[in-house]
Length: 171
Image (cartoon, rainbow, N blue to C red):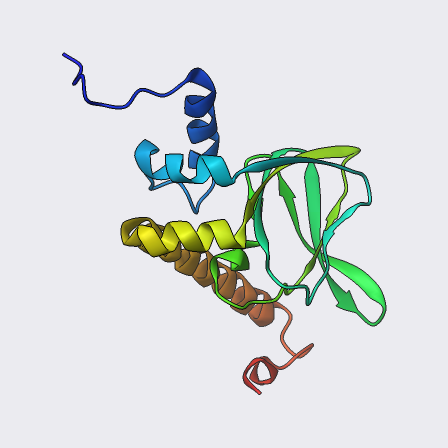
């Protein structure tokens, strides 16, 4: 028998929770924890070649892709080199979880159009401040995400030995 004190969610809210569960940073959150993000979510439409943010911009929001494709690029001698393609059900701008961070890549829409959910940094921080368990789960997922990126970086370095020096990372 259902507990009469258990909160029920609308079909739209349940669909949003199912979508959020696809994204690494939210996959371990319970519905009542994800619910905290609902009022902070803004839906934005973008068109092809629109820049979502530039490298070195302040990290003011996390972006979740509902529809479309985004290329994350780095500036290499006046050119944009794509480092990652992100698609539906993925997130980018993850350093918005951190305090006082700047973007390390430029995000450009590459599909004809894209529907993104935008969660502002200040809203994330308010949720973190009042919900240490949510913060712990998301920061653990962020650490795992960065660890996976480091493993890919080091594998790439081993496979292309001689083209750059890892020592430069720490200088």
